Image 1 (cartoon, rainbow, N blue to C red):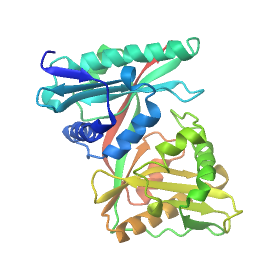
Image 2: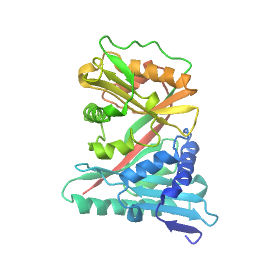
Image 3: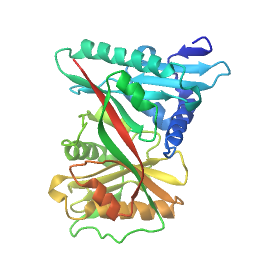
Length: 317
């Protein structure tokens, strides 16, 4: 298109990218949730080569109107992600076909370069269900819906009663436990759909060392006084695009301590702490078919579904 300037992503584009991604969410009936720092951190950690794995389309007046990215899986992983989108006012001009075609081709190249004999999948994750244009575009390129997610939120003014299980102690997050949190997360989510193991060095920038992480609103549970006690569960909280909210990005309970009410206790504590810090709501995203029954846990803690998203997928190799 002559009226569009294409170039790779640059870190200075993060605010414009956040604005675009939030516009896509709101257009589909969702809640704007992306921050510039969050997106920059994700891109830095997941996109191996900005020159070949990112596409930014700018209008003549400098506005970002479309973007696309292809990620590279972690070592031993088999899922790469196709992310981005076209501003609602710029749809119908072929930008979506151009971006998705380009990045799907790039996904095949990455797969061939890494493990051509091992089946991979390319996924377009967490597409708002209210987006009427995306399904047609994905079908055109052979991507089908494979998983559904709920976006949930709870008010901090209605904190449910949830006592910490006997024998367990809950503390505010401390960086000295980051390796233990990583190990607990990899253990807790190993059986979850789309899980990919990440080494500590690549996991930290995505989570507890990211610019959007809020340590004072994150919690760790132990089976006795730390140090020396075993980590039994964790809840990690992040900044939200809406300053009246915070976002729970990871919540896990290790298998020996499940079904004791620890997850509910952690959620109640973070709702109380977030409210005292001046936030009105806490939000999170959950697999609609979570094998751990997470949806029910969140509902008992006062969370309700605001919107839903869909993951689309196609095999590689």
